[in-house]
Length: 157
Image (cartoon, one colour):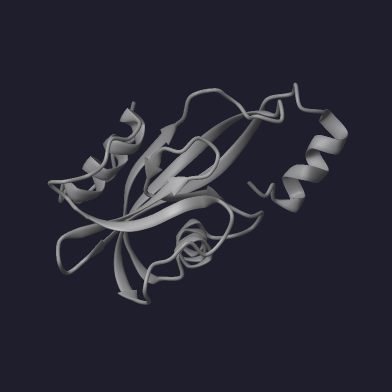
């Protein structure tokens, strides 16, 4: 998985053992056939919605659109914020430690055929909401929040 340049620069100063607090996005993308866009992650082989780290100064909704395009080749609209939550503590394969503040958005597919567009995913696919592959519980919770129809975001407080 590529490490953003600014995270690599931070790591060169603080080392891998210092736990970084990083902002991230999750894009739960739905298309008209009531299907969800999922990726099978290259780092652990699990299925998940599109996720990624927000660049410094980048608006979160812009980051969600960018990540969807970079990872799957599809254009999306970002419709609403559905969840804000601190993730679990992670130790990456290279020893880097991090905790991610996730902003999950409900999104709509606009155009493009989904494909594996970078090295962060092994597979990309559309899945009916009643036939999703097994995934980590926190990713299923993000999808449930996006599909809930709630007008306000869940702040996990």
